[in-house]
Image 1 (spheres, rainbow, N blue to C red):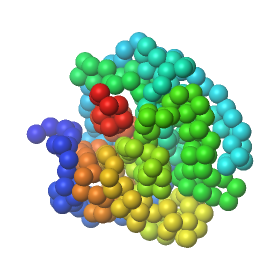
Image 2 (image 1 turned 180 degrees about the vertical axis):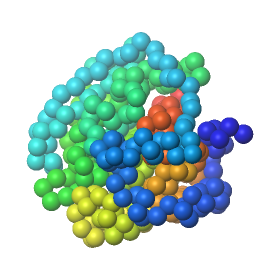
Image 3 (image 1 turned 90 degrees about the horizontal axis):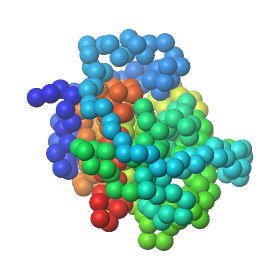
Length: 313
């Protein structure tokens, strides 16, 4: 069996996920998680060493192919929720543009990222023009936005979650995206994967489907604070925004979670897998918390969302 092959076969049971994941969970501790977001983004030394360890981070996948790109519009607005100007990009699929009524994906960036680099190794316009197995994905639009480094949860004077729900999504709906019968999904990588899950948990009536790639999930506030003191404003904020504790709120909606077995956040994903609704699709495969794994999981995540957001997909 190809060690880089995905272990996704339809929908996994939580029991099967735990059987694969607990071995990695036993050897990865809170210390390994500390700073991993910064390492993965090259902000701390160690990324090259991490990539080379036993070949665990070597993930092979087909080079992505794209149709002719649709239009992509970038701009900025003053966010009352974040108390600052935030940049955004709206990307349309091929053959569509301003005025098109389309389902919408809200794509959340990882730690240290912004609206311009929310995806790994592709732009929002490329994501919407992606071809998988020679076929274009169903037409959807994507929006990315600057969410800062606060893990998409409320902090004093900065509430990126409220910005997404109360400002960004209404702006897109005025453009015909995710409005009326058109559905809205959310997707994210790392910190953004955590944010996508939390958005779907907190706003079940707004987000119809979610795809989280390598979500940055901690199992305790002390673990989170030791790794990234800015992730949560307080222990009370961690409890209020604990995606593991709030996982039952995902019930009734399509959810896809992908994690590499050598990702230091994988123990948190294993803990999450114990409590997510049994219909959740959990993909466990070789990989680390690095761009190759993120990029390998973007096409299947987008296909997953298209099947649940676009009626004819």
